[in-house]
Image (cartoon, rainbow, N blue to C red; front, side, top):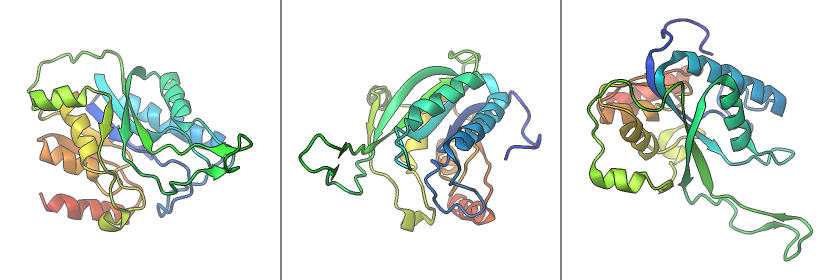
Length: 233
């Protein structure tokens, strides 16, 4: 993905995305069942391309899990963050998204024993990074309200996830997630990119908040789904 030059380097103000988690979801053409090393190599490639596309004061918001239980338990959030730093991205902060999604609320493993308990994590991360400098070079128009700013600068965001059946995508996130990131970390009329566009949620949030946006998606079906959602606006 991202192999051509239709998007010039040093062009994007804010990248918001939720990459595949490598948990064998059906994304059509995309392979979501790589070995862990292959997955991290893939992660390095797309993060490097995004780094080149971002402006010097460009920012990155990644929605990623804390860990993954596919085979051996892995610290996926930490590993992806380390790959991003290896690429050149600089770390700013982490927002914890409490989506309240507990698919199996019962403890698994050895019941009432220290033998092999399993900890359930009903939260995900939004890791915030930047390319060269955190402070924006030019002054733009912010549209975040005082109440929103006070609430959202608290790094624990609590709102529900999105319905797969309602959206028609195997792993959608709610519009509220990119909307908050867009209003917090970009100006009106800035350019937003989602390199894993999926059902187009980031582009919808950009449209609602008066930003320009671009999305990249390997599946033609998901591109058409995103187009249908955007046409409503």
